[in-house]
Amino acid sequence: MKLIITAILTGSVAAFIPTNPTFHRPSVAVNVDGLDLSGNTWKPESDKMGSTDTGDYFPDDYNGPDVDFTDGMMAPTSNKRDGPELPGLENLGEDAVIMGGIEANTDIPAGMEFIAASVPDGDFTYTVPSTSSGTTVDLEIKPVCMGFEDFYASFTSDSHATLSVSPSAGRMDRRGGESSFLTISCKPNGRAGTFTGDLVVNLPEDNSKMSYKITFNSL
Image 1: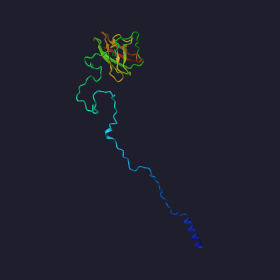
Image 2 (image 1 turned 60 degrees about the vertical axis):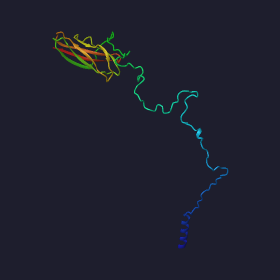
Image 3 (image 1 turned 90 degrees about the horizontal axis):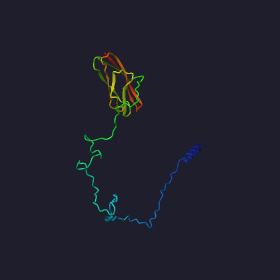
Image 4 (image 1 turned 90 degrees about the vertical axis):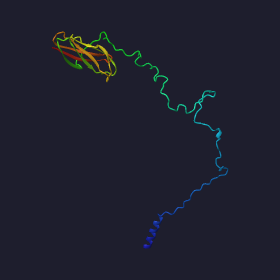
């Protein structure tokens, strides 16, 4: 019985053991009949060879001087210039005359109204001796527009008659530029009291304005 089982197991295991395959390297048959195996015997004709990477840009009948490929490769040997760096600006200096440009308006247009804003952009109070000939103060106005703008300045019609401003017109710099300065004058002419007024700066091109409440205490 044991011999039978052993034989069965041995046969079953042997069924799973692969046999050694025989590998055959394929062979390629090359037919060399009619082939020239002596190598390439071609050689260039040196006396006919020339440059092939530079084009000939001169016409056939060109009789001018020969231009060598090294021309223009050296640095300039002189700082002398034949003309200005920007033609047309030869005389741009102290003696230059610049034509055109922007001219600032000096007069207030007819019919322009100066109306104080309900909420002023600034409120300033000053003191002036009533017996003096008057006093002046400078009001700094920082530019608020994206570009240059004409401005017109005046006190409202209901402001005190002792108050005035100069200049009445000018050109305001663009935002981030230089400030504009207005000179406010108060001449009490011997009168004591509180003089108030609304200073309005119109910017018609920007469709806006600035308004300041000005008060002088005349003592």
